[in-house]
Image 1 (cartoon, helix red, strand yellow):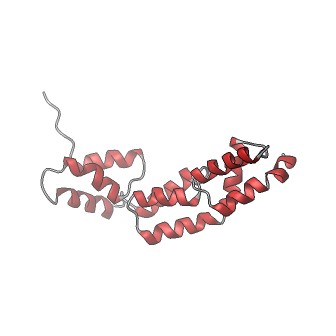
Image 2 (cartoon, helix red, strand yellow; image 1 turned 180 degrees about the vertical axis):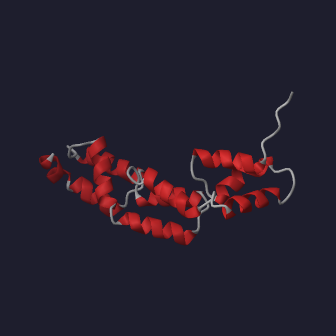
Image 3 (cartoon, helix red, strand yellow; image 1 turned 135 degrees about the vertical axis):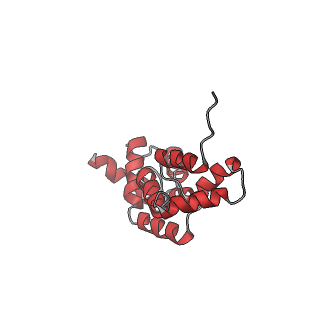
Length: 153
């Protein structure tokens, strides 16, 4: 006895059970399984109408999971890669900018915990934070303020 192939809606629900997905992500992941044109669009329309696909929940999920470790620009890249509306992404990123320095300091403290000893180490710490998507101003504040921070630890 063979197994029946799961429907597009079933596949979408399985993906949504793992984590929040945007409509664009589901479209990309399920397109190879579409047998009849329009079938995928109809399945996604039904799921969106029932509230299973919610772009705002996707944004909140990404921000919640990633903001503690990444800067606003990296979070923006992840949100854009999910095909989310540009205005909603801009709002989420703007909200993150207020806490950029504190989040960068937290990431810096976990990784380094002490002020750079020389220019090479300072550059290494700055590159590390830049690779995580933190802005230049936040990076300068954290690394330059490292002397003050290290004394207070």
